[in-house]
Length: 103
Image (tube, rainbow, N blue to C red):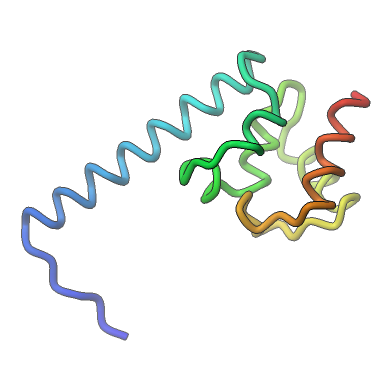
């Protein structure tokens, strides 16, 4: 399938939207890392920034969780490495919350 031809204005608008999403994701990750928001608050948000974020990227934003630990947690719970937050099932969300409440 061919990509649609975009005008210069459409291209600039798309680039601006992408930049805004990256900025919002970075702000959210910083808040999570500092403990300003909880994982539960993030998972309960009805926000396209959160919905489109990969679960591994979200977990790596948690304090004391790096790439290896995030992969281990996801494997234990049964979350595919390419899963996005919007694709998590109810049980997977509950298991993630339980894991971090026990920690």
